Length: 366
Image 1 (cartoon, rainbow, N blue to C red):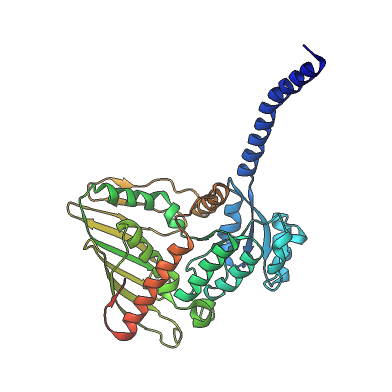
Image 2 (image 1 turned 90 degrees about the horizontal axis):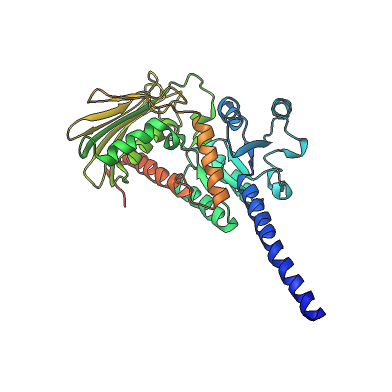
């Protein structure tokens, strides 16, 4: 073999030997990137963020709390001390659009009042961050669509915090309905009521909330009727009443609505800020029924079936579950089942319910 041929042979053999090492290295790098915990910055440090979201982030597999966004310096200092958040990862609402170069933050979890979701999401998208947003997505269909369009333009993901869609007992109800264990569904009854004792909170101010009990609580009942049937309502009819018109001068206090679905299923739903706390859903079918009571709480969800069986699966932390799911969607570039479009659908129906209250007539949905 000539010297030149020998040299060529050695180089080729070396390349063949090194190739598996390169492939293995790239595979490991890809796996490491996929398994990397995504940094979450919480935007809005209210009660929900403090008591549920931040603690849940400590339990997640794919997420970590790396940043905060607040206009309250005292809160910011307390959170930094409690969670070890670096000063460079602390932003105000006016400076959050400067997060673009911060690799510690991948996702902004928007937990501010409903009517601020659009503004805070736009700033997050402009900084190249994904957005996980508390429900409702926004206060109008148009503002929801702006958020969806901004996410697409930024090539980022937008999802809504519909935690019950990740809760085991609610998922079991979906399974029972799809399996038709009691035959075809006929009726659904759903209620979501929590008394509001404070008169000066943002939920009672239309400019910030967009609505009262229906926007804040009724959306749980509405969601349940949609994910249990697997359908979108085609007709809604609603009525509102106020026992305290001064306290609820700007928003709805108590709302009852009916909905008709394409299969013929009828839903009867109620929500109130001025009643005993209740969070219940019951699905009635041809040969029996199944229900959850409580159905929408942070913990302790359970129910029963007409055949005597209990529905009592371990829930885990619903907030941790939904955030981990969003992180996996980002890591694997997969669509989320609680996408911005899902949030838009609810706001369209809520808007139709308010229209029915205003006009006193049933409203058709396309």
